[in-house]
Structures are given as structure tokens and as C-alpha cells.
Amino acid sequence: MPGQPITQRKIADHVSRLGDLYPPIRLDSVDRTVHDPAAVASRFGHTIDYLARVELEVDRNVLELLVLLPDVDETNKTFYADVWAPQEIQHGLILDRLQTDIGRPPTVPKLDIGLDIKILGALAHMKPIQDITRMLYFLTGASTERQAVLAYNRLHAGMLEMGEQAIARTILHPIKQQEPGHFAFYQMSAMLMIQDKVLKPWQLFLARVLREKGYYVAGGQDKGRRAEVGRMATDLGVDADVEGYAREIGRVESRLLWAGRKGMESPPYIVKALRESIDAYREQAQRTLQDA
Image 1: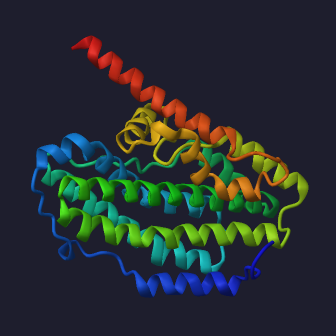
Image 2 (image 1 turned 90 degrees about the vertical axis):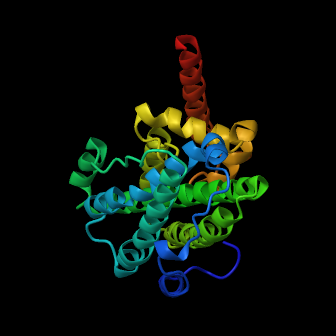
């Protein structure tokens, strides 16, 4: 593996720096001035709601982690309990307040734990299963955080284009500063597991199967909400280059989980999940037009 080897100390130091450099963004530190609320709501209102919902669902994510990783180490606990969750919750609260400023209703996060998590959690006390689950957690985190980085970058650019300087400068810029550090944590953690050969070949095989069967774009774990993901992807222009976007959000697992597949630019299941979400939105929009 190129570069300096990853160590637990390096990851722990990274988590400590994240906590020191980026305390949760205070609501009273942002300027929610909106020059044209109707235009912002029309162009990006759904995206703001989507991002607010995904950020506020970290409460459920923490509960899922407690179920899936009962023996998690202190570095991971510090990351998700003291750094990641407090930062993400503030992102969600600020974005949710912004969307009410532009005339939209508050978001409705889904906070109940799914049956699939409960079933996997029942097996998590067995170390070989927990190691697989831990790898899947890191891969999901890397993919989700990369999606967040790309979404906030595009939304920030869009707000600047619209002349909404306050939103771009005091809300989106501070948020997008925090997301790359989260991505780096998940990427280094997954790399360490591969570097140290934590997973045996049968565990890697099972991780690939579970990842392929269970992958979903962030916020789209429920089939009923995939159209929301598709609309976000459309509003941000992701639908114009699905393959390129898939390469960006799947690059960690392409390199680590599918290293033996020559020529694979991104796992096919990522492209499939994106296309299904976009198609779901287009079908929904077509039905709305027909009913009008």
C-alpha cells in the first residue's frame, strides 16, 4: 500500500484534531439572510430538506452503531459520539431552520431502527461477524461522507451563482469544511483493516456480497424515499454524469473491497442505486404531471 502505513494512533490523532478544529457550528453564528426565498425554495428547497433529513438521522445512526458494534474501540466511540454526531446534528438543525426561512415545512427524519439492522445486530457478538460489520460501516461512512462533500460543494456553488452570499459563506462553507475530515476517518479505518489483514478471504467475500445486495445512496434505504434521492441528484446535476459521480463516491470500496477486479472504475451496484433513484423521481414527476 503506497505512502505511510495507517496506524490506530494516526486515526486517533485525526479524530482529536477534528474535535479541536471543528466544534459544532452554533446556530447563532450563521447569517440566514435570504435575498430571494422563493427562488431558493424552487431551485434547491428539496435538496436542503434532503440534506437536513440525512444529517438529523444521525441519532438513528448512533443507535444502529450501538447495535452493530457492541465492542467498538475508544477511538470509534470518540469519533461518532463526541465529534461526528454533534457536528452532523448541528448541520441538520441549521439547514432545517434555513428551509423554514424559505417557506418550506420542517424536515421529518426517520429515527427507528430497521429490521435488517436488528437481525445483523443479533449476530454482532461473534467477532468474525463484527469484523465484517465494521468494514461495512467504514465503507458506508466513506461513501456517505463523499456524497456529502460533493453535494455541499455543488449547493455552495449554486448559492453563489444565485447571489445568496450569506447562505454560501456562513452556512454551507462551514459545513463543507467539516465533511472531508469525516470521510478521511472512514477511509483510513477501512484501509487499516485491509492493511492489517483483519478479514479472512471468506469474510471479504461475504462483505462483498452484503455490500452488493444492501447498498443504497445516503437517505435512500427505504424504497419509498428513493424518489427524494433522485430529485436531489437531479437538482444538483448528478443525473448528467451518473458514472462519474459513482466513481467519486465508490472509490474507497473499489480500491479496497474490489481490488482484484481489473478495470472496475466503480462497483456496478452504486451506478444501479443512483439510476434507480433518478428513475423513481422521474416516474413520480411524470405521474404528478398526468394527475394535474
